[in-house]
Length: 401
Image 1 (cartoon, rainbow, N blue to C red):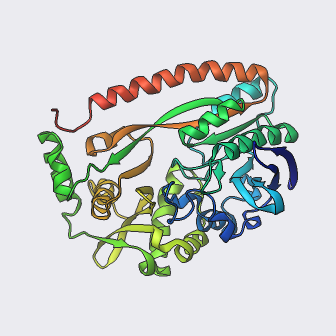
Image 2 (image 1 turned 180 degrees about the horizontal axis):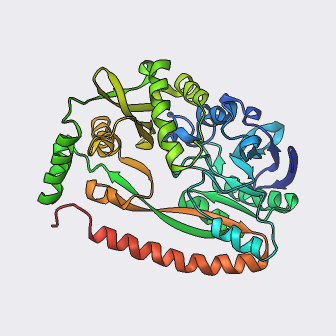
Image 3 (image 1 turned 60 degrees about the vertical axis):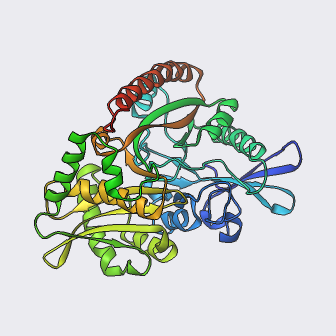
């Protein structure tokens, strides 16, 4: 396992070096903000809170994405003359496939039954976060293509030097997938459901765009969800007190323990992001009888609201839909955000105004035999994803012209 290393090369214009660093602390906040999409003053790339310095550093400092949990940092720094940061990749050496949301357990099982060792592997992602965003991060203000090409090649070089079975770049934008394919990665697709804000002036405007039956169903669900003297709060910034985080963490632990067996995020993580990026967070909390009974955490990007974790300590009909989906739509409309991403999977979101969207990942497989098998599998899987996506598009809940 490598901790530090270098890979020399050149772009069309400049000499560069790629360093592999064992901690996110090897990036200062000031230099990280020079990468596209990492801050709100980036005019070209919308801000993505999950690749912010505050989010990624908190994952490491809180003990969530560290060697002890199977996420050993192996981040790439692309440096120009004088050590100037030109690009970066959030990368981890992994001993399992948990917390990724792009599933390769079948590949691992097949390779190990054939006598291979699938783990460790390289994983390029934001840990525990199924949201598309920059992965081959390039410096703002210039053409990102040279940096992306250098970083993609750097990933294959690192995989070869470490002797790992594979390298995986998940929830990447399509232009980055193109650069990765040129470096020998295989293309994979999957599907999520997102809300698209069609410049609605209010939630009622959104409802008016739906077919009558769907519109009535949503109105009934919202009434039933709040029918037992339940109220909803939007909390952000200074509202995110430690007492609020205690309540939400109790919800998160309950849901995480039932869904995954072991929740990924620590209590300290929520305190850290509250301190570092509180204005980028929306907690939707449900209150009844003087206490919080349910909640969902969302992250506010430049043009997107990203829904993440939900939990509750009381069960009420349709409260999950209200807190996670309808309140997110209402917030996005009020703030003028273009999209709500509601996390992984979930065809049930279709009836609630969320439409199918294709997500992308890229995979470098070192062993020729495994690579051929995976490539054949992905050819069929991409066709299936496209076919299912077309079916869901045809069954969207919106009024027909």
